[in-house]
Length: 321
Image (cartoon, rainbow, N blue to C red; front, side, top):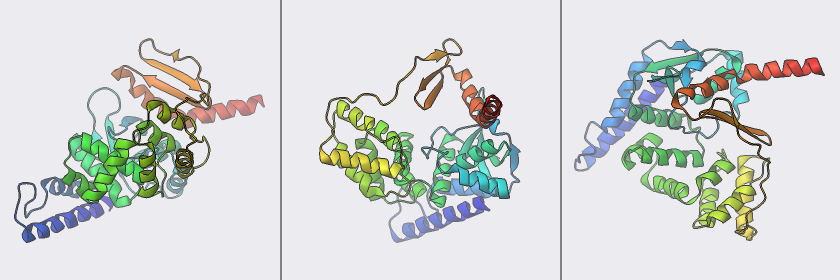
């Protein structure tokens, strides 16, 4: 049903393009039949909606090459409980993956996959042979229809589509925005350092004005100032509260070029597999790395087994108590 809705949404976009084409001189980029990319994706989603979904082991699913959400774990508990109670109502979309590791790559539905991993159940999925181009457009269209991306997630994703070679026209069509909005999204990501954006987080429910204010405050800042701002981001509270704290600090002039003391103590990096797999502990965090391409599937394996690892640890802790 979801894919039917998306296909209908695309068809409306095509009809709008057709009407615009009849009212204006034709151009190479737009014809009376609508943008070729949208018509192609409408055909893809229509064909997929006619197919029966399959049940796929989460361990066989790799993450998408271009993620449009910062953290799929944010607010995941509600979705986990919903799927536990009623099952997975909406199938995800996967595409076939080449090379070693998982057989499939997610096109959209990362949160549903994460919820199924947490529950230890298989993922209900449609599987389609897609190019990266088709996958990115489908991902953009589906998530725009569900309106789940925050302003800054939208900005970062639009920039990634830009970097992937998509035209401004196609990005606007996929994200359901106009060119002036796309311009604002681009300037925010261009002027706010990525580490600051990631440190603050997605900030669901926060519109463009606070991010535009932060852009004006941080634009042209030295690397030392940026590092100092990152170091004062609160560890607790919501992303919206972290954003507000950063804006307040910059507005008050309390941030200077002198670097702050690191908030957490890092332990030396430890090797699991020489030349490839290693991990590093900091206060409250662990970073696991896989340098060799063939070993990167190990990260997916660890992720899929995290709920079981936690259960094993909790059981052992109870025995020792």
